[in-house]
Length: 90
Image 1 (cartoon, rainbow, N blue to C red):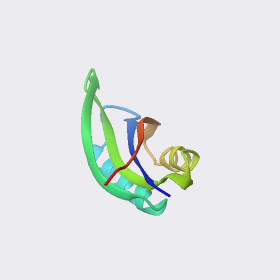
Image 2: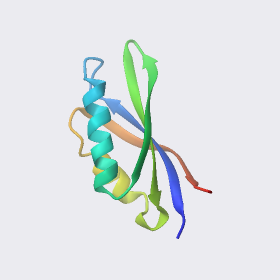
Image 3: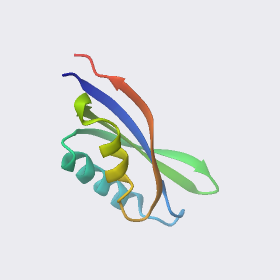
Image 4: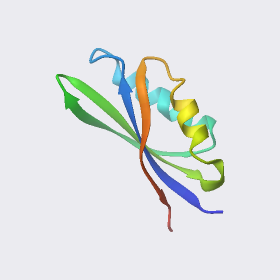
């Protein structure tokens, strides 16, 4: 089976949430579900609130349920949403 390249947006509970801790927790979550971590980005939302964008690859047969279930278990996040899911080539 092929791999999927996934981009997920993590919204913290508040603007005061430590984004470095969220990045570390996201990387551990990717590894826990059998994915290959690529990188993280910070996206400004509004009023000092920033989202963490996590980019990683995962075998397609794992599906999207495992992603959302595990990312929503991370402490200090409001939500985790898949914003891009595509087949990885190369």
